[in-house]
Image 1 (tube, one colour):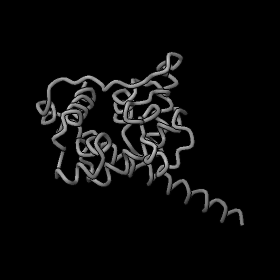
Image 2 (tube, helix red, strand yellow; image 1 turned 30 degrees about the horizontal axis):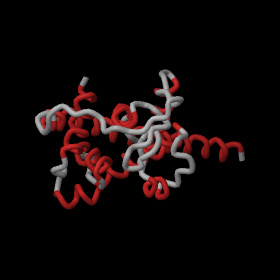
Image 3 (cartoon, one colour; image 1 turned 45 degrees about the vertical axis):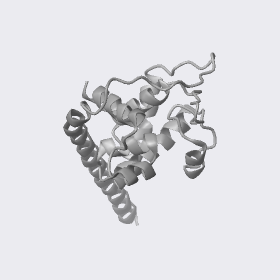
Image 4 (cartoon, rainbow, N blue to C red; image 1 turned 180 degrees about the horizontal axis):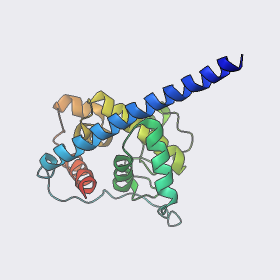
Length: 188
């Protein structure tokens, strides 16, 4: 029976290696997409600043290396490029876990309450939970738009319905600027 246990361990290791290889290919595809599409997106809109959000005075940005570790973990579990998650968090909340937008988006990844429900978020102000849910949402949008990062980012900002109705990045200045800003940071 020891041989059966050894076989099961080796099979599990082999499956884990296949999953890691598949994720690596997906992440590399996302990076190539970023480089190709950022050139186009760079001319889409003028420089943009983040919309105003309500940030409690006691809510400071999470500092590295804690932030990097949390982003890397969430991104790896969801199969998303950590650089994309990092730039979305930077753009959405400036890495402040207690941020609340005027429209009601909450937390580090600025998830709307209905999105939080769909992703089973219990505490949107918990940085790890927000990063996990935001990474999962990004992965869902990347899959929906077949790896097209500008479309996925547009849907993260304006909602998939607006992207689908527009047949691309919606003609919403905030959304165009949002996509341009993130893609420009990813190239540096």
